[in-house]
Image 1 (tube, rainbow, N blue to C red):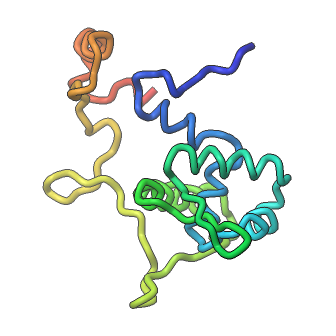
Image 2: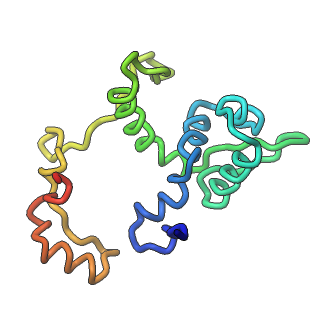
Amino acid sequence: MPRTDFSRMRCPIARSMEVLGERWAILVMREAFYGTTRFDEFAAHLGIASNILSARLAKLVEHGVLERVPEGARHSYRLTEKGRDFFPAFLALKAWSDRWMAPEGPVVRLVDAATGEEVVAEPPRGPGGAPLRPEEVRLLPGPGAGEAMRRRLALAGMTDGMEAARG
């Protein structure tokens, strides 16, 4: 079965999966958020084969998530603005993982460097400040929606709530 090319899909979530959905990509990003910058450090912390790591780093650089910066005779990898913008999504994934996949507790705690307070991934909130659940969100076509998405939302009555998200 041929691999689906998500980069050609209209959905921006699918396109982001082309970059970040590959095996190891999120773990490379985790290491970048944890301060790893050198190829050998990524390899040691991840236990990943050099050829696979090289391919993942190259893809993240190609898509502007990391930049390869000369550092003496070698290079380092630094988060770009695009990469740093992924931090809230990473925090949400880490919070979910710590809750559901770490029965013994988080492996790493993230704290504010200035205050020592725990960094918290806030849930989405409505205008009144209450946390929102998927079934409390209404879907409307955005400016980038094509006719198929507009029809889908209108015909399925999905603009009245995220019925599909519930099951």
